[in-house]
Image (cartoon, rainbow, N blue to C red; front, top):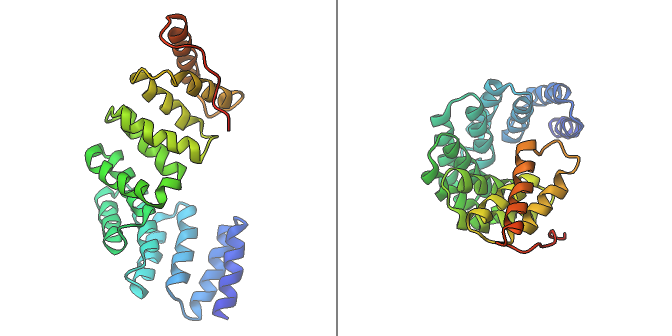
Length: 237
């Protein structure tokens, strides 16, 4: 019965009916819960933004399996959303102690440290994330690149990271914009192609701000008309 209820709940969760999934997990746990059951119910509470109840379930999952990195990861994010920043940092560090190569927990810790203005500390964990499977995660790369451009002004490293981000997800206009900013500071004329790609992605898109679009247009015109750079086509992908 336990496994049967779990399968139904998982299927319900995929369809987005969180309340129905929670009800089914409640019934399944009534027959004898385990770490998977509590994690799964906790995830439903998490996505309903009921972070306190989510944490209760993640803690139960960790009672069954203290090395459950996945549960620690979700617990840390729930704590972050409750503004319990130091507790979130502690949970992520615990997860890293268990699995230092897991990119999601390194990314999570980097992101939270960055959100608190602890940029130099964040670099260590972002680097750890992108060194492994995080090198194939556009969200991790884009977030790291943004911090490097706007918070640390490390444009050379930002170009490396954001180039990779646009390779992994060529449709991410946010990454292309920040990539262009970094190239512009380095006076690298590839910025013309990057701006054109960004502007093409922004055509009709609501995710691009008018301010950023105008800057990309004006910066390209200034560099070309001033003779600094020659006109270039946008990148193809």
